[in-house]
Picture 1 (cartoon, rainbow, N blue to C red):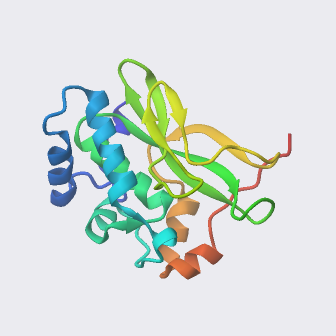
Picture 2: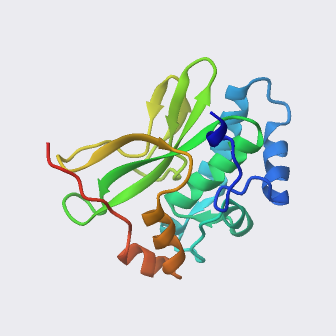
Length: 193
């Protein structure tokens, strides 16, 4: 579990602003589950999804997401992991491979989180941000993710990573505007079922 509590370049929970926000969100909470829910709802509802709101800059580090108040799903998952880890709650990164449009190519990765809750074990949560047709929620032990898997080449990737995938980090760092990133969303090849 130690690797899911570490501070790193992109999940920089020791940054003073991230630590302060994590402590603030935990105030009045009575359990790891209630702290996790407060952190989740803050990131889902208060950090704008960059593409939905057409808001630059492209962020990657958790602290930058908090400072700018915006991020793509990947970046928002970095902030959520940082807030959870700052509160001593193990958190990792998960991915889905989804159609980037309304079905069919192109495909891209979608970033979300897994949090370790004492009562339930690993529980996946998706703080991407709700909008019409997208209604993710924190309701353990039932998952309520933003997107269902529909097509044969879409996937729920079962791994829980302690650090963001390199392909995700490269996309966030190399593309300086949301428009550039949208044209270069990270993807991986999968073998058809």
